Structure formats: structure tokens, C-alpha cells
Amino acid sequence: MKYQFDVELDRQNTASFKWDHCNCIFGTDDLLPMAIADMDIPAPPEVLEAIVRRCEHPVFGYTIRTDPFYDSVIYWMKKRFDWDIEKDWILSTPGIIPALSYAVLSFTKPGDKILIQPPVYRPFFDAIEANGRTIVENPLKEVHNGNKIHFEIDFQDLEAKLDGVKLMILCSPHNPVGRVWSKDELERIGKLCKEKGIIILSDEIHSDLIYKPNIHTPMASISDFQDISITCIAPSKTFNIAGLCASVIIIPDKNVRENFSKMMFNCGVFLGNTIGNIALETCYTKCENWLEQLLVYLQDCKTEIESFFQKNLPQLKIAQSEATFLTWVDFRGLNFKTHKELEEFLIHKAKLGFDTGAKFGTQGQFFMRLNFGCSKSTLREALSRLKKAVEKL
Ligand SMILES: Cc1ncc(COP(=O)(O)O)c(C=O)c1O
Image 1 (cartoon, rainbow, N blue to C red):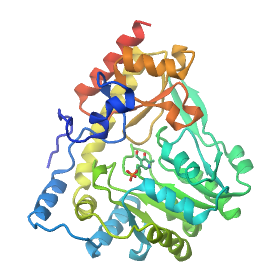
Image 2: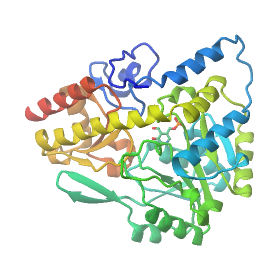
Image 3: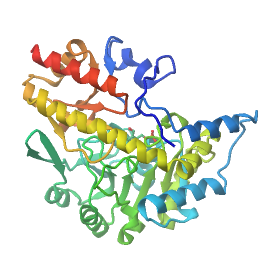
Image 4: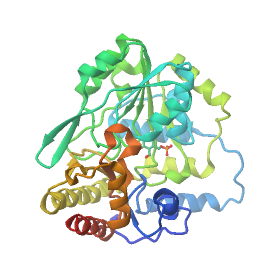
């Protein structure tokens, strides 16, 4: 079946965070939102059909997870990543954001050190700070290559910072820079953490959205690190169903798992979302073909962005992305004095709503994140607005 991704969808008045919350995020509705990590792309028709079928039964009572739920996760991990997992290893949470906090609460005490690699997804900072733990930053290194920036792990700094750290929250693939960590890089991280008895929470929510020839390796699929790893995955980004709140946490080690699931229980999280579970099972068993076609479409958008920037916006650089529908843009070449001035310029002059780089840590100053999971005409409109505004500076 051939799926359509390049479609104009009006998402306004659907309680969309991206489209119906602009005033709150940007202080105005008069802009084109290219923020928030969901796509303006319809979910797979197979998922919609499964949901409609379930809705033929009129009761949405308390819902457990049955064998097809677990089997679908086991099938997907084997099929996509050649990783054999067991049913017992699988837990489920309403999202990965809460799972970050469960891990922080399970494996650390107030004041303990937790390491992250900024610029990185804001809730990593929040889960640590809101729970009274201490952030240790191992910033990514920038390697410039023409108008592209390749982000790398600073292993020397990582090694120097790991003393006393209890938990590392790894973003794999990395949001916002789009790196797919190689097996070699993961082995180096794993080895350092294992030596120091550090648990790794590997947030792999973007692991299905990988561009060839890159290959995603789940941290816990490397047998040496299975006993220190917590793997977070979800169909939410991949199949655009974030609003259905069904995520999966895979923990092979019994002690680590019991610790984590006790915290979930203490927080009252154990039952499932009726529709979310059905959607997850359908995504993981019936939608691989949809995903393969989506990746071709997104690759096309990514290529268009890369050549547009190179040709029309040579003052700006972009991260050399290997995954996700997000582009990390470096605006330092425009020489704004403050990040706030850059924000104001984009919102009020370009009339574009990007995710502000400041959310991703101090390393995000003068950067913005652009979401290209949308129609080509929306993407082209955004690029054209940006070009026109930059030309007027
Ligand atoms: C790295 C990363 N983790 C987690 C999430 C959100 O996860 P959830 O919606 O399952 O809470 C996102 C969403 O953008 C993300 O980029």
C-alpha cells in the first residue's frame, strides 16, 4: 500500500499543543509553528482502523496489558534491532517523561549527581532539578564541516565528570542534534559507567526514525551493559501518536527492574490506556511498511532543508542529522547580541515558531530547533519566511 505523507492537515481546534497553544508558547498566534516534536502527518490508517474497531465496544474501563501487547514489543525489537527481549523485562508508562522521574527517584537520593549531555531535551534537566538532584553536564563537542556541525561526545570530559555520578540519562538517538550513537561510542559510554557502578537510562524514543546508512543499537542489547540499562521506547514519535500516551520501558536486570517498578507502583502507575495499548500493538505489528515510506518522505524533506540552507542561508549552520524529524539550527552567524533578540526576530519578523535553543541548556544559546515533520508546502513556507527575514536584517 502506498501511503500519503505530504498532506495539508488543519490541526487547529484539535487541542494540539503545537497549533492551539502558540499564544502561550510564543506570546502570539500570528506565526507558523515549527516547534514541538510531533508531526503534521496522519497516523497510519491501520492504527485508525484498530481504534475505530475498539470503539465499537462502548466500555472503556480499567485496562490491563495482555499477551498481544508484550508480543508486539518483543516482535518490534527483534525485527528492527535484532534484540531478543523477554516479556518480564517489559514495563509500560504513560510516557517517557514520567519514566525519567521514576528512574531519578528509584536510583538516586536528593543531592546525588546525574549526568546528561547538553544541548539536550529539556525534561532531562527538569526530572533532575525538580526532584532535588544535581545536574552534571558533559556537553557535546562541535566539529564544523562547511555549513554543517557534527556533534560528538567529549569522552575525556565524560570520564573526568563521572566520579560520584549515580545515573546517566543518555539521549540515543540524540534530540536535538540528531546523532545516532555508533556501537563503538555506546561501548565506550557503557564501559565507563559500568566501571563506576552507574545506571544508564537510555532514552531511545527516536530510535525508529533513523536515516540510512546509520544503524541504531539499543544500549541494553550490548550484553555487557544489559544489567545497568533502562531502555525507553515508544511508538509515539515514530507513528505520530504521542497523545495516546503509551510508552515502553525495557529493563533486563531483575533488581533494577524491581526497583523501578516499585517506584511506578508508589506513584500509582500500573494500568494501561485502552486506546494507547491497541495503537501500540498495531504500530509494532502492522505498520512497518508505513514507517519505511515515512522515512523516505522525511529524508526528502531533510535533503531539501540542507540544500536550502546551503544555497540561501550561508550565514547559518545546521547539525549533521542522522535521525529524527528535527533540525538543530545554529544562528550565531547572524550576530544577535542576545538569544532573546534572536527569539524576537524569529517570532515577530520571520513569524516562525521554532523551539528555542535556550530550552536545551546553555549550549543552546543562539540555536533553534526546527520540526520538519509536516507537508512540503508548510516546510517551504517556513524556509521562505526565514530567508526573507534574514535578507532584511
Ligand atoms: C528524547 C525525548 N524523550 C522523551 C520525549 C517525550 O516522551 P513522552 O511523550 O513519551 O513523554 C521526547 C519528545 O519530544 C523526546 O524527544
